[in-house]
Length: 181
Image (cartoon, rainbow, N blue to C red; front, side, top):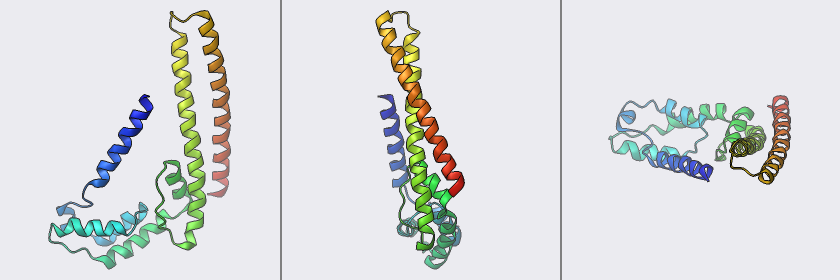
């Protein structure tokens, strides 16, 4: 139950941050549009973010330089659209916005899918470890009846087998990643 609340808090925090203005008035006034485009590209953002920048900067009386921004974004996408960056994005369940050019998209997607597998297994392993810790904590309680203890020991054994399987899967994915990324 606590895990679900924790995950909801992260999602809500992300949504709140996403709803904020893309740039402050001061950032608009001092903007290096090539650099801003480069940063947005390196984070895998779509061109739609530029329109958010336009809206933010309109309040400051600044008109963003689209050409400089797009040139910088292309430079940033070259850093983002790599297999290793795809792996990281997939591992942390970041949404891929289909921003990579065709010549790099395939490699990025390969890394993204592998990272997604890794992240899922990593989360499962985290959950299993938490379950083991919780059950072992219950076993240390004096109020646990002998028949309940047997059941809890069986659960721990089953979870440890699952933990071993997940650790082998993480090793397998890491081996594939090391060979292909």
